[in-house]
Image (cartoon, rainbow, N blue to C red; front, side):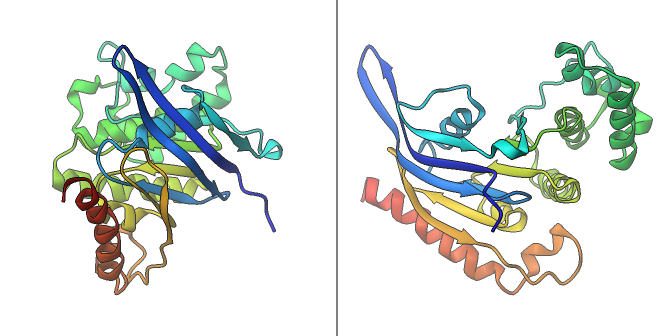
Length: 257
């Protein structure tokens, strides 16, 4: 059996300030397999983004451990809620920003950037500024900027939340297809339960703060066509949505009822 690409074991974390301690995460344990797209959902403020920051190495857990599969020589890419494209640089220059900063800009990186822009419909916009692109196009450019660094694990922190609903549907399906075709392992944080079901192979449900893992749900959809946009028409979709809604609404009720 193939070793998981990532294991989180008993992760605990608290925030500290002058008013005292706020416990965010308690004994979070799960694993991610190679090529899997894992979604993490839970009540607002339960610590989903904090967990992603710990996995990325931006925060250090108070206790517990993160295990990376050493055989994978894992590089991590992080896609945030905003695209953070630099307005004074063209899309081409934005996409190549990572290799420039890390001094790894080569002809091979440029060829990869060119191919990704071509594959995903942005090549003719490569000399445009971000302000000349739609929100969905900017998110695709942000993803390409991340993929040029060839990460083995992609972390996505609500990357579609700034988009209007119609654009969000199209772009999430588009980016989901890009991730699947590339074979990159990914972890997606989202508040949108329909989005989680449509994109993920598994969904982890967190409790309210201090968060722990409440459920780990596999997603197997019978798709009527080879498109993530069709996922919401799958016969399994409604039952999965109802299950997730109950899991999370119970958490809100436990806090407020």
